[in-house]
Image (cartoon, rainbow, N blue to C red):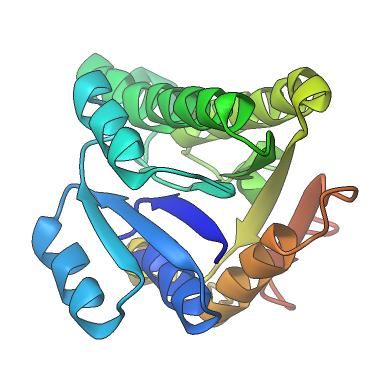
Length: 233
């Protein structure tokens, strides 16, 4: 049975992806802070493994990975949007929090996954980082989020390079306007926002995860068809 750890698994894209993998017969480690949400999912699926942890807590996230065991795939998904403001109006504490979660948390999860995949027998695995269209084209007033998503692309490229000798592939999925609670906040202020069902993102992650060991989806963009990304001026 193939195995995956999903961070940020208690809501949004992480939750939808967890359901998609569980339906496909995978053993799924569910990492998030809200233990009750993870337990509820585990009550529905025998192969769901709740791993309550904060991705910014080094000891907690390490314990979660060690408890899970053999790891084929990490979906490095946990993140937050942060303040919607121009840079001069961003509080430094808010900036630090977004950096800590979106970069620090992703770094620690990738570090643990890389170490596990390098040491296990058979050696190797796959890391899928959740980027964003903001890794390429930012929204207005999104300086914190946009900076972190550009950093995720750098992480993806470096892991792809460093993982080659150990059979560790790394790819990035850039998701545009999937219908989640996070996007609902945006639609409240921008009702014209075009969206797609979040399951489209989940199915795309599954496709990336199921690639054979000798192939990798390096970057994938999946988005609402009519959202203004291509040709944005």
